[in-house]
Length: 114
Figure 1: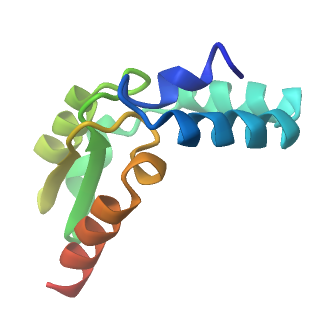
Figure 2 (figure 1 turned 135 degrees about the vertical axis):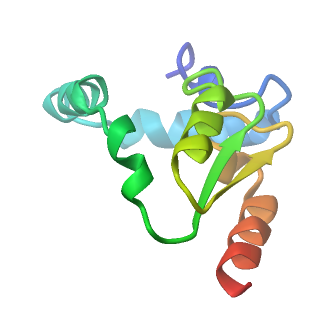
Figure 3 (figure 1 turned 60 degrees about the horizontal axis):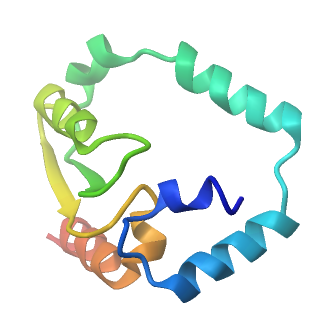
């Protein structure tokens, strides 16, 4: 986890947050079969051609520093989903919701309450 966890956050992540994340994920370990299934699902799922069928307002949130799933992928989602809006959490990585919980909550509240 010490080697992988930094990729889930921005380079400027709070060191205490990173340490807590490493401690928690080192104890709460995902079973190998679960991880393999997750990777297989990610690699085998392709819904790009069906995104245009989404008929509801949609928010797509990403971190500007996400190196796991780069923000350009979220831009593609927004281009393909008719009523989508993109929210980029500045200075946050893949786990933007853990790194910037207040900003994430504000984005979700604004979207859901408008």
